[in-house]
Length: 447
View 1 (cartoon, rainbow, N blue to C red):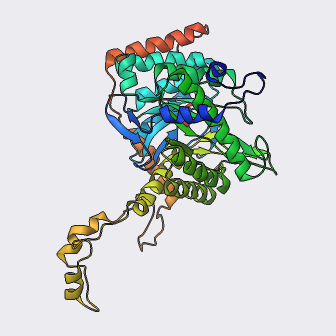
View 2 (cartoon, one colour):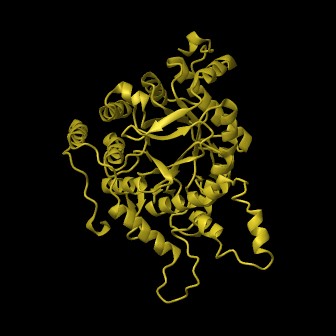
C-alpha cells in the first residue's frame, strides 16, 4: 500500500515516506472528533478548543487498595469498582484499559477489563488491547451496544489504540490495529512510548522528532487505508532514569515533552493525546501530589485534548483509586485558572466600590450574596481553624471519599437482555481457552 502510494519500499527494513504523503494524510484527517457515551449521548468534542478531557486507567498489574493502603494484584472486581468510581467523578470524563492485570490469562484479560468498564460506566472508553483479534471482538461487542456498525461509526464511544515500538518500528500488531480501526472508521489513538536515553536519543528535541515520526507514519497508513478516518495524534514521551533504568512517569520532562508535542499537534490541526495525573511514587503522599499537580497544570495550560492514565502510580505499574479521586480535585482547581473572567458592570461594580468606600465591608452586600457561590470549594482540603484531637487529615478524607463513591455510586444500567448477551460473549472467550466462566475471587480481606 505504501509502495503504490509512492513511498520508497526498496529496503523493507527501512521504508521511507515522502513528505507529500504526510501532507496528503494531514489534509484528509478530521480536525474534530466527537465522542459519545455508550447510550449515544455526546460526551465531548476533540478539536483543540474545548479544553483537556481526562481519562482514568482502570487496570494495571498492581492495585493500591484504598481499604488497606497496600499494593496487591489487581482483580476483576477492582476493575469494576474503579470503573464505577470514575463514572461518579465529574472531572474524569472517560476510561482507559491496558489489559495488563495478571489475575486472568492475557488472552482474555484485555477483553474482560473492557467489558467491566462497559457494565460499570456509561462514559467513553479507550483500550490498549493485546492483539488485533481482541480489537476485532471488542468492536463486535461495541456494535452490539450501539445497534450496529454504522451506529457505532456515527456515534463512537470506543477509542482504539495503536503504539509503535521505539525507535522507528511499526510492529505487525500495531499496523493491524491501525488498518482495522481505519477500515471501520473508528477513532484511533496513534502513539509510541520513546524513552530519552534508551529508545530515543538523550536530548528532548531528538526524542520529540522520533515520537513525531512514529505517529505521523501511522497517520499516513490510516489515511491511505481509509481517507477521512478519525485519528488522535500523540505519544507517551518520557526519559529513562539512569539510576534505576525505569521509564519515569512523574518526571517534569514527560509533561514538557507533551506540551511541545501539543504545539506540533496544533500546527498539524490534529486532536492530541497526552498523559497526566500520574506519579512514580508507590504511596499517596507529597511526591504523588506534587507530580500529579505539575502534570495537570502543564497539560491544561498547553491544551492537549485527550489525556489518559490518570491514577497510574509506580512507573505505570499500579492503579490507585485514591490518586484518581485526588486528581479529580486537582483538575477542578486548575479549571478555575483556565476559565478566565469577563469584565462588565456586574463583575466590576464600580458603583458598589464607590459606595462601600475605603475601609468598608462587602460581606452584607447583595452583590456578594449573588456571586460568592462561584468561589471554588474544596472537597478534600481543609480550610478550617479547627484544631482538635481526632480531626481528619487530607489523606483520611481522601480515603473516605474514594470508598464512599465506590460503595454508593450506581452508573446508568444497560438493558438486562443486552447484559445477558454480553456475558454470553464473555463466556465464549473463556470457553475458547478451556476455562470456566468465572473470575478469580478477590481475597476476603480486600473486600
